[in-house]
Length: 397
Image 1: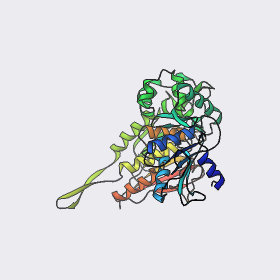
Image 2: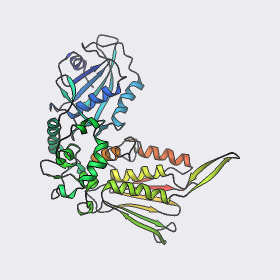
Image 3: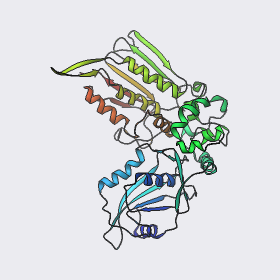
Image 4: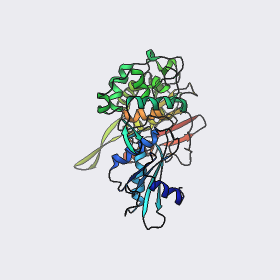
C-alpha cells in the first residue's frame, strides 16, 4: 500500500519514467503497453512502475468512480495472454488525500525475464513516454535477463549449440506468431539475437536455453531424458490388463503437441444422444477440450530438471490417469488449486500460449472442469504428492 505522501508524490512527479497517468480505463491497448513498459524497466531502476487511472496530465484527479468491476478489468490484463511473459502487478483503489476523488493504481514490478512483449512488441519507457524498443534496446534487455534468470527453462543448456536447434521451426512456425508483423518487417538480426529476444538462447553462454531445446531441439531427449509422453491404453481397469495401444511421443514440442492433439481425437468415442424427438446432441466418453487442457497443463508445469520420468498418460476402460512429474509449484497448494497458479516453466508457458495450446493463463483446469460437467462426466480428481501430480478423469455415469 502507498502512503498518502507517496501517492501525491507520484501524481505530481510529471517527469518521472516510473509513472504514467490516464483519465480513463477505456483504452486497453494503452494500459497494457504501459504495463509492458514498466515490466521491462529499461532504465533499470529495479523499482516498481505505477499506472495511475483517474489522473490527468497535470497530476490532478478527475471525477472517476473506481468500481470493483474496473479493478477486476485491470487485473485481467495480466492473464489475458497478450503480455508475455506474465507481468507481476497489483491493483488498488485509493482515495486522493484532501479530496473526494478516487483513483486506481496499478503497481508493476520489473520482470526477471525481459524482454516482455505486448502483442508481439517490446514496449519501454523513454523518459516520460512509451516507445517500441529498437534492436539494440531489446538486446540490452536480453543480456540483463541472463544474470537474473531463475527458472529452469530460461537457463542455458551448457554444452549445446545452435546446431542442436531446428531454426527452420522457429523461423517459420513460431516467430510469426510471437512477434508483430511490423517488427518482423524491420528485422535484420542474426538468428541468435532473434532466439535470445524470446528467451530461447543465452547470449553470454552462446548456447540455447532449455526452453529452446524443448521447443525446437533436434533431440531434446539427449539433454532432458524425461521429456516425453508415454501413452498406454489398457483393455481393463488395472495395469496388469492387456495393452491395446502403446506409444511414446517425443521430439520437439511443436511437433509433439500437434501429434498429441491429433492422437487424442482418434482415441475418443462419441455417440448421438436424443434430447427430444427432433433434437439430439453428441456425447463423448471424454470431451476432447477437457482432456487436452489437463494434458497440456501437465506438459507446461512438469519438472524437466529434477526427474527423468516421462508424463504417463494411461487410458483404462473406466478412467484416464495423467501422471506429471513434479508437485505443485510456488504459491499453489492443494487448498487453493486451481484458483492459484504459479509457473514453474514460464518461458514454456508463454510459448504454449503463443502457439494456441493455452487460451488464457490460470483458466485451464477450471475450464476443463466446466467442459466435463457439461458432458456428464464427474469432475477431474487431483492427487498431489511432493514429486508428482496425478489427474484422474472418469467416464460419464
